[in-house]
Image (cartoon, rainbow, N blue to C red):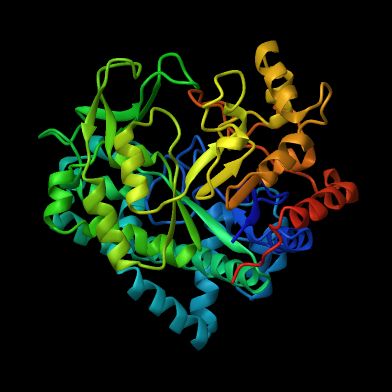
Length: 480
């Protein structure tokens, strides 16, 4: 069934949380006939804010919790939110104390159930966060030996000494997932699906690697010998050195991919559709010696993607996966994706200036595809067009049959018109924004992940343009 959706991370909402702006955005999607809301990963990031380098493969980002909703639930007081400097961690501690004091039996049952259902990761994550605070946010591999190696006697003492802090961390995660589920239910009830994103790798400085170091390629001192990234490509002449640890696939396969199954279970509860970022890493991933400053001197290391995907689909047969198959894609990667009938991604910004067999050209896009004008890693379509070389621009004008097209509107319509079953438009392109509103520039660490939109920028004429287009290209189909 043909569908349309919008790409907008939670942090890009005007208030950047699961509150009133989020439900209002669902209403906007429903109004224009879009049935998919795609976000970036919702996990808890490091200080750089990247949702692709997180402290846990499971834990949610507490910044997305709506504090106003906690006031409504009597977990906070209104005056708590108007203090000169609001410390969110302190507010979550207050919320937990009020929760304990008021003895709301319904909430208590929900919290106990949440802890039980997430026991596979929640305890380790809470310990990790407490220790990370204790050691002033230094990486876990630099901690004193007893803590670095998660020795049972040391962990027992930490649990005793920091019992309140651990409980607050667990309660904060409970609030995150509770608010997210309420938003997802609201979206689903309005015919909108939630489309998530799972980074193929996890951060080295994370609860996952600290708690299960044997599942990653580390040396005897638990340091990385190789790191993940991609070779030189469209985005960077020196490639991208992500710095994530590589998986010890042999160890993972020996226990039936339990770590992956637990990770996918969390995502399956959260989302209706799920993009596997850097899907090609399930066939082979670029391994870079940890001593290298760039990604140039790496090599491809094979991965058991077929066995992993077979295991995932057997345990979660209703999970709708999408493969992010951009970059250096080989026949083997295509075979793996096609074997499991996973839609691939097609980016219109990559379509022009080359040969007629370019797979991103509109006439070459197949039905089992998710079509984008651009993604969070691309410039906005207007910014892209303003910087486009003359040869590519001429090619684009030929395809559009116009020497002065209305960009980005022309590419938005082009995406909707393709055969691809799903068309996703970044919110920046709906608003017609230029490069100053870009979400991320790959290969850089400053100034990313900060963009937010303003409701005042969304004009009635934007809605008036999108709604009939979505209907005209038979994409106004509600989710379920």
